[in-house]
Length: 157
Image 1 (cartoon, rainbow, N blue to C red):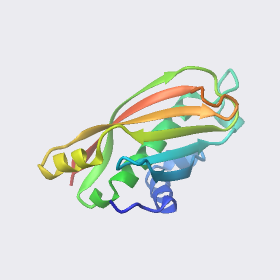
Image 2: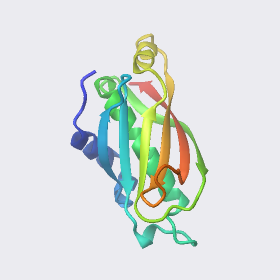
Image 3: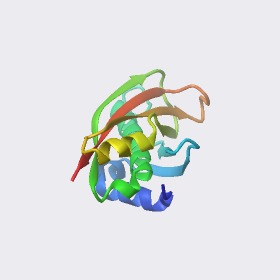
Image 4: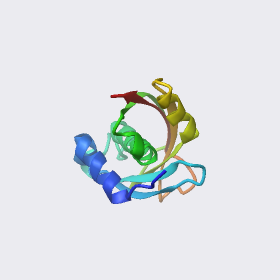
């Protein structure tokens, strides 16, 4: 796997997903995870325009942050497959654990071996795979405000 540049991945996501731009989400870190995939960290600014009725980020903003971080993992991990397959979210599940305050970060990691996903794609299948996301703040390090699982597919072109 050729590891893509974080700035290129961030620009691609923000170009193709305007809603992430609307929320001012940024991709702040992208690195190999040591097992063939990628770890991505995306950040949502502390903006009162994004707050809910209790003063934390709106649930929809947290969901979008998590999905954006998971998308960065998919794009970076499978960059060399994107000429023949389109990544699509199949389903997502999020559990809101505690109120987030301040700047919020989502850390995402692939839950499958990339080689298995590519192998299924090469066999003509439409593989599904999971990205796990932990969403938290600097105010509560080690305590997730939300946890998310996003199931993705690579749809052959």
